[in-house]
Length: 255
Image (cartoon, rainbow, N blue to C red; front, side, top):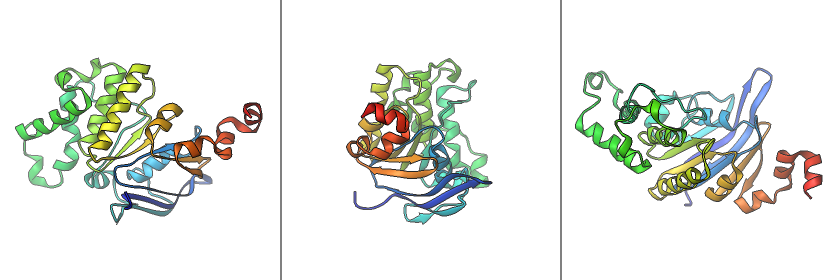
């Protein structure tokens, strides 16, 4: 794991006078799980939006697999093998679980006019979608309406939709939020299996037990700036991180 799959180099994003992200730098190596943590408003989702092409950076470079991708549209970045989930799960409620994954496949299909008129439910497409659903544990629910799924399965469906395009890098934005303990344990194992299959994972997570247990390394943001980077053990003992989460008063009580 000496090479770099994704490099974020001195990246900033300003909204008027607000510096949502300010000179942030970090790298992700292939087959690594990197945790991106920080208090609310630290700039984590803004960072995801920059990597996935939703926003264009005010300054800095984003290099994915050796190619500068800042400024490219989300569909162009997705075609390079980057899939992402969102904090709020919004499937196509009237479509089945299988159809939701098939729709996500469109990003790699509709890149020229000829494919627009081809079937989006061909045997090959359905086979690939079912393989992904089996991977996340939803194959038995493939023909159920997405609106009928409980939150735990909706989180899995969101990951399946990201996996269908995220062949190289998966961005998980609070995928464990709202889940029960047993659901969290199952989803943790799923993420480990995804990494074992060769997919690199960048995750935002507020559950510190999950973030520290899953991540090989952790990057900490606070008010748009990177304040720490290291192993989970190093981050848990970092004074600046403790202060960012607890504040000076909270830190004095915790000491």
